[in-house]
Image (cartoon, rainbow, N blue to C red):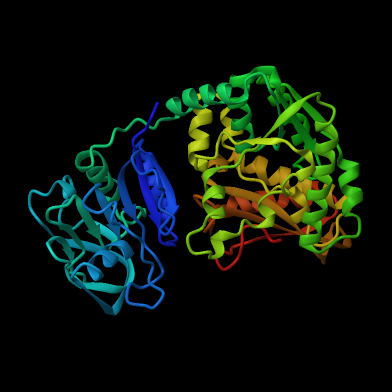
Length: 511
């Protein structure tokens, strides 16, 4: 089935992925492409959105796309930088704003009887984020909306299906942002809302059957959402020709290897569990530098996976749980921080000598879509709701060098923390949580004895995609109970602290 698609041209805005997610939430398929790499096959794109940008249209480093095959020929929505770009290069005027226009604002004027603002009333809150402002509209520009500080907050161009706004409809703070996008895409551009989890499953399974035929495929399962959903899609398509390998690196959570392996077997997967704990711990002996630890884990994983893959006769494909943000980051428009996928996000790619073709069933999906696709296949809710867990596992939550005893301590601490989050119905309200074993001992008193034992930090954050995160304000009673339980039950720990840092400036993990 050929979906009508939306083309999002990325000018390097931090919000570009958010635009795509909002479009997808309307059950409309979209793709992000760099502004300077517009697809040559544009026929299937029925509408175009220009993203915002940290750049200025007045600067020397102006981002200048060729819109000659788009403007006036396809419905176009220009957001923030896009709106300023259209004005600046089409007879309008963009100037530096007297005050940086950033944060909440309210529409105090909306032009009557405009389809673009159907269902949106005066006073609607919008989110501004720009230091330039449009002083004069472009040729044939018609004013559609204003705020108290920004006269030209929205406009259209007469004679074209072109709309432009100086605020961000994709962010949560623009209360009618979804309605505005729906007005443009559904009512003005006339796109069908046919991008659903069910349609994705049907089309992907059919596509995998055609692509793979009777070939054998090997997939490394991690216990996480992405690899599990990828496995289910492949299982539906090729059944026993999918060979899953679940490696225990000795750095998983307490009892996780056994529990997850049983879960996979219960789903009917052709899965083999490989306990390589000793091999990984041996490779990590004496290493305390975070990057060296990651590299040792990556190298060992590749060796273990390769050994197991070679036991399968005539395997031709390697399946991976790559998702859309990874694909976008590899072709970043501006080469900024998003252009490099950090090494701690995975345990390293597989070596060239494996000589396998790669199949990536999830490469068109965002993380929240992966979960919805899994739910549509009736996958276990607990598996789909699992918090993200770093590829190197507990190795990067044990600061400094690793020993078997340190892993045991952290597994016990983590189990108390996560189990309490579940029993207090807090687990699903947290995006990611875990415990960190600090490389310090502290003085304590237990009974009449003085102790000198380990300190652990608990970490819980709220986020949508891990790019930014806020620490979670967990109830004091919960923290009190959890701290007491850890100190009483976990031998070797006498102090618990709670990390109240947000990202940025901190990161979610400590290493």
